[in-house]
Length: 359
Image (cartoon, rainbow, N blue to C red; front, side):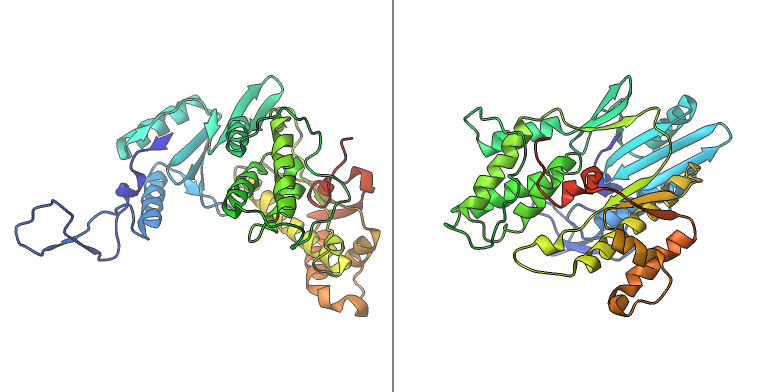
């Protein structure tokens, strides 16, 4: 569903005045207007609208999620209704059709709404309903990106970036249109939400947005060519998947040509971040009563960091990263997470740390 003129629904808590609008005749000259409702352009307009929506939806029996404040849940004896809002765009899902009908009627009476029907397109994400589950793609967004790049040839590439290639901040001739480079890289960043296979290439190219060189632009065009050759790629959520949460972590700070950092420390930093993400997802899933009873496996391809993280003995050589070590150990002890070694060729997180071969 879509809310029409969402920001105009917000109630102002502060006292706000504005100058007399052009061509607006007031009883007295030089009069000013006191705003009773929010207007587009006010800094507090988004917050005022969200506060208005939150208070309204709570009247309908919804509670706000503690894990994601844009998520609202209504749990009743007859079913579960979930509502997700992003500014003025709303997704509703449920397991009881009567609940969703009542909710839509309530929203129509509270705000000016437009019912867009079954979810097929949301924030440039395309939703495909397949016999095996639901697939998310960004094909239309990718086609628009390829068109903006202005390709005229039909060259086919099978990987987004050449392997074993290092890029420097200063390398050859500067690119004469840095704005175009920045726009295309920014568009690719949004595409990585679904297209995980270009994540590493995009993060490499993002390092040069301030001062790109021609070699960086050439590499950027290769990534876009790869996207053009793989439009149908997406993420499939199988309808028969088991509720089991797993994670993969990897780091490659030592491979950076511009800076060198401790590889062990980097491994712990990403493990700590992945642990936080896993715990957050477990909390989020528990709110609609989706219980994950087993621990979550965190796969790591470095046996040294697993030994240190699971060993309670103080390590003098790693005391500068003990905060991350103890953070992970707590989750291991509490049986939320277990660390497991994985061979490098099975490490899915390599998508984020190195260029992949065609195989």
